[in-house]
Amino acid sequence: MSKRIVVCITGSTGAIYGYRFLLACSKMQGIETHVVISEGAEETIKHEMGLGYDELAKLGTYVHKEYDFKAPIASGSFVTDGMVIAPCSMKTLSAVATGYEQNLVTRAAMVTLKERRPLIMLTRETPLNLIHLRNMVQVTEAGGIIMPPLPPLYFGEASMTELVDLTVGRVLNMLGVKTDLLREWGVDQE
Image (cartoon, rainbow, N blue to C red; front, side):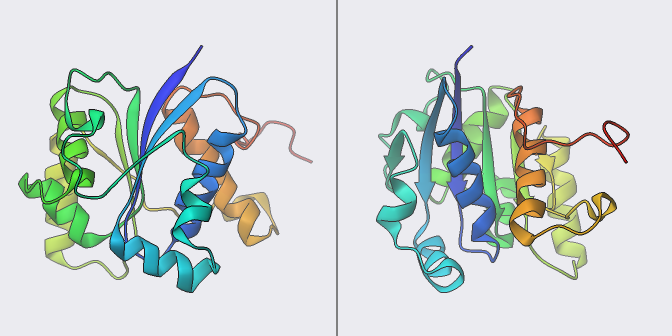
């Protein structure tokens, strides 16, 4: 069973989520990723992870430029199994909530919503103000899934990478991809 997933990384803190998601997908058979890395994300990735654009881009099957509106993911006729924005900045959340197709990330998100495909947004900000919350409600009402990447601490002590991977596993599961990154509560508990 093959999957075609759009993966967008924006400039919010938490670049590790997009990186680990792409890394997981690159190691699985039958997953085609279409990646967009925003200019803001390039700076965040360099600062938080010490990685360059090319190091992250090589994990994607196809990589599209941030303003390439001719990319296949800009059209609903290009069928995908869903889209993940990891991390999702409040700027991107706001653009999606208001239908402002400022770049390929937000255009692809609007296509995903209009085609009724899963759109999962790993929003990164705290604390949240009322504008953030209203934007989250707006996206949820349009069919998107707001998923702040909160680590499942109930599994006990784990490294940051393990906690990130548990979130990545949940996102993959939501897209119908089975992975050993997902641990289920109550299964194999000691």
